[in-house]
Image (cartoon, rainbow, N blue to C red; front, side):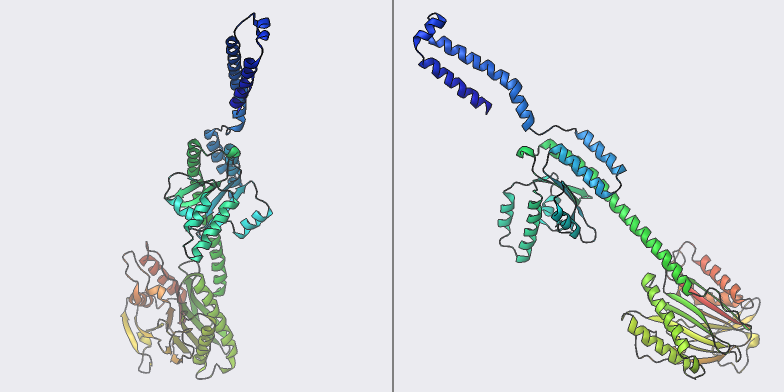
Length: 526
């Protein structure tokens, strides 16, 4: 532009010289020819041009050209910001502000892939786009789908993607023959890019997957992004990938910590549902233990003091593990306690326990899903008559151990095992009368059975976490080992038997993880 002005002025001067009267030159140059004047004018114009090019032109170009920036300083500052920023949003704002100032872009935005939805959500934008944009950010409207056209292109590019103003029309024409759903998706994608005036897209990759992108608007003076700019941006992308990956790791750790605290609270609450200590009775010893596999679980045991010197004993195992099983367990406990109070007056009935289990089954069917069920054992022991009345609803059959010195021809239970230990000989009987599991079939029917107990008899009711405990080779502890341990300690107290069995199972499973909740109850008649 300046050169054109200079040439225009030179032409006017030459025209003036050539058209002027000869007398002017004779009086001024003493009869010098016209050509000499023209040469002098051209020389003078050249000197003026050099002066202008040296001073004025350089100043103008310096003002119009992109400002220089220190790439190393930018990367170091961003690295420092990553260490000191109080939040991820503050870090993003700082990075985008530095980019905008260095590249003199109209605006810069960053989109980060959301793990839950897989969409790319605008996490920050500089400068602020106004109240509507803030609302769109909070409502998640400034998003790009995981299958967006530009995301697919960025996956296969190693350098930033340049967007020309005419590209939007080209993309729209390319999708004219697409399905309405796909056209609508591309329309929304185009609206986001136009709103942010996208001119350059920088992909942020983690393990060859696009984890985010930085969107840059037009530069001041409509300058293009140079190769040096793109190289600097690719270096920045590596830093951003590291920060995003760390941020996601921190979020996962925070979520796990939150879950850990919730599990600890849930475990504390669940422990409160279990008996603090067994009831103290004159002719009966009770002891129980529940050890969940995951902090909280679906195993349950309970002792209930009833009227007429009776005590209720319950052991249950909810299908599944974790919090969901624990919630079902609380339903079982609530139903059991409400039903034992409701049928208190009918406890002497010949079908009292069976009817109670049927009622609990119906309540559980109405309050849980179709795939939820519970194995359940409930018994009531009468200290005066020394009779145990029980119902087994699909549970592992509890075992009654009786020293052979107490056996006679009037025993109604069928022996399943005979033991001859160092201290005493004993026989073992199973309690398997009852019906199917509860919570699965609403109209299930149950039977109850009454057995006579004697001094020295010991009952153990357990869940499959005991017998199915694995060693490091994958072998189960098994019912046989359980029976052996109990028979060896039959002459000792209920609490001692409990501790001995726990030690034996723990020794068996040393080095192997606990896969299932472990629960059992010991009842010994004195």
